[in-house]
Image 1: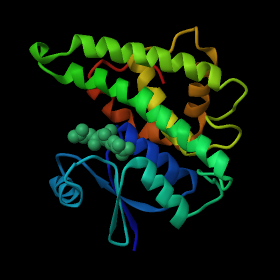
Image 2: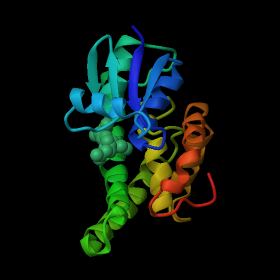
Image 3: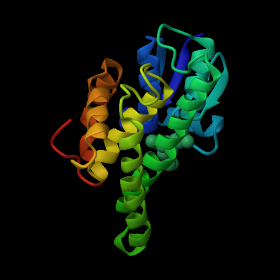
Length: 219
Ligand SMILES: N[C@@H](CCC(=O)N[C@@H](CS)C(=O)NCC(=O)O)C(=O)O
C-alpha cells in the first residue's frame, strides 16, 4: 500500500520530512491539508487529535512527529542516503543536532510568527524579544559547532540536515543570520542548493505571501 503524507508545502516540519522522502526517492501520495480538501484535515484530526502535521500513514499505521517519521522511513524504506548513521555515537550526534534545530531554531522562530498572527492586544512583546535573543544565541553556538563540517553532523547528509534546511530557511527570514555568522550563512546556502530541499522550496513558493512577517524578496 502506498505511503500517504498529510502535509502542506509551506510548513517547515512538512518540508523536513519531504526532504527525507526526496533524498531517497521514496514514492508517496500527498494528502494536501488545504481548505479545498477538508476531508484531509478531518482525517488528520481522527488519526492525531493534536492535529499537528506532517503525519505519515504506512500500511494503516499512523506515524507522527517529523523526526520519528524520518526514523520510520530509514527503518522501513532504507535508500542510498542513510539519514541516521549506523554507528551509535554518530547517530547520537545526528539526533542531538536535530533536537538543537527543533528546540532552539524552529521553536523560537515559530514563537515570532505565531505572535504576529495574534491581535495586537494579545501580543507578547517580552516573549518575542526572548525568542529573538535565543535565536541569536543559537546562531552563535552553531557558528562554532559547524566549523569544518559540510553538513550538520559531519560529512554525511542526515536527519539533522533535513531539520536544519527549513528551520534555518525561515529563521533567517524572521531574525536575519548576520555577517557575524559566515559559517552558518554558508551552511544555509549549501542546504538551499541541495536538490531535495531546493525542490521543497520551489513547491512552497506559491504560498510565500502567507508568511506573516513578510517574505523577503530572495531565496
Ligand atoms: N513536533 C512536531 C511539530 C509539528 C508542527 O508544529 N507542525 C505545524 C505545521 S509547521 C502544525 O501542525 N501547525 C498546526 C497547529 O499548530 O495547529 C513535529 O516535529 O512534527
